[in-house]
Amino acid sequence: MQTQSLKIEEKIPAPKVEIDEGEHLVGEFVGDENGVTVLVVGSIHGNEPSGLLAMRKIAPELKKLERELKGRVYLVAGNTRALRQDERYIDSDLNRHWTPEIVALNDPDSSIRTNRVEDAEQRELLRIFDRIFLTARNEVYALDLHSTSAASPPFAMIGDTLRNRDFGRKFPATILLGIEEQLNSTILEYINNLGAVTLGFEAGEHRQKTAVDNQEALMWLALYHSGCLGNEHVDVERHERTLREAMGDPKLIEIRYRHAITPADDFRMEPGYENFQPVTKGEVVAHDRMGEVKVSETGLILMPLYQKLGNDGFFLGREILPFWLWLSRALRKMGVPGIVHWLPGVTRDPFNEESLVVNTNIARIFPLQIFHLLGFRKRLWKSGKLVVSRRKHDTRSPFVPED
Ligand SMILES: [Zn+2]
Image 1 (cartoon, rainbow, N blue to C red):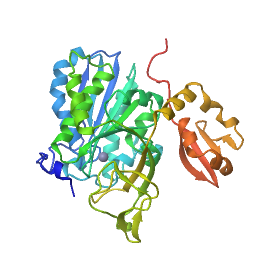
Image 2 (tube, helix red, strand yellow):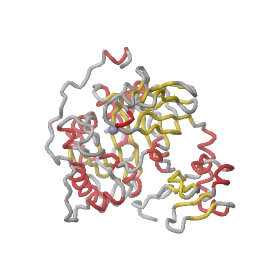
Image 3 (tube, rainbow, N blue to C red):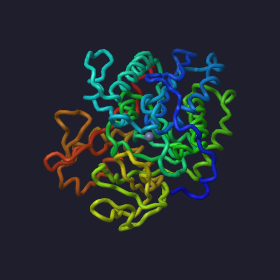
């Protein structure tokens, strides 16, 4: 069920998008080769055409502006074979496909070929990404454009590094922090770990025409905020107005819970939930084969599932107060994350220098939130111990040359 106000809005008419298999590169524009790189990935979910449509809209304009670019711009379509069929994916979710193992399997230089469609898609994308990242001579900014199955105001998502926060704050957008702790192996996590500044974006409901407008506004603002184009070429005010009108007051929200599902669960969301709708502890928001699904804590419901395919029933989030942001920045700038293993019960993981192993008793005294503050995220529980790891490239870019 959609809300009344959105019902009357224009929908993207065509059920399918014209695109060839493997036709990933929508546009490549190079002005100053020593400048920043802006990489946009759109429609990595094939049932989310707005990313691709918006990239196709701005490509001719970027062509005209190519010589003015203080850097390079790459517009890349995600799951081309799924887009052709208007499916989220064919064999497996291409946005959960970026583990080191699968990436190694689909290395463009490897001779191994599987018959999974998304392996072919990933190999083609890796060939493009390798070329972009190997030739970057300055900061790399990456956007990942999505849309939602339920009616929703647009919002942005970032992995919690200080560099991502600084970039994300420049947009008049509600930002979700910490989604990558819940969703493993996304394309944005992969690109983030390569050292880029990353921003994910959900532009609204899949077939809402305004989703294309929102994607477009976000891309222009990213070109401006990355320094790739000046405000003589970008109508900053107009694009900010587009986002502001669609989003309302920007908030910063921390993801606290993901309701994971499998097809066997027979998960059915109760009708009428909208993104960011407040829910209270114990509220029945869905049913599955075990009966009622109640929310575990009071907060905001995020991305309730109203489509067939997907592994996320819904998320729960909570607004973060500015004080915590300030504290977290101060602690991280002071280098506290580098000495947190001095605490009793906290040791460095001998197998991974970015990770800490936390004794369960200590985890009870210092809850996960403390580690979040310091830029760590939960990885797993290993023989009764909590393993947290630091996000790479928190404060320094590997692409910006040192003075
Ligand atoms: Zn998506």
